[in-house]
Length: 90
Image 1 (cartoon, rainbow, N blue to C red):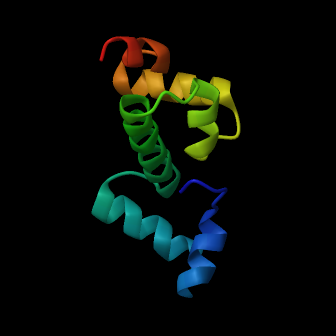
Image 2: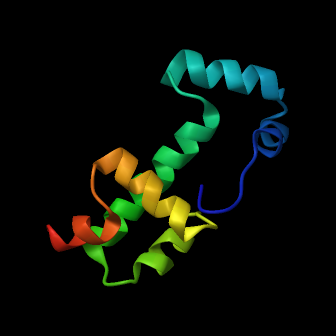
């Protein structure tokens, strides 16, 4: 999840169709594949914020986000605060 991943690439690894994987994720995890990957990345980023002194930019990139602004928006949407405020609140 820390590298760029697509449904097509993921499916090819397991010899499954994109359509099957897409349906599987919605049925079993109740969210689309792309949202699941974002959830994994944000969980990883939260752990990094709690356990390291790495910069927000470094954490975003290490967690698989290519765009730091998007990372900040996604983090705030999931946790209700920006990554910096989250870290300061620890």
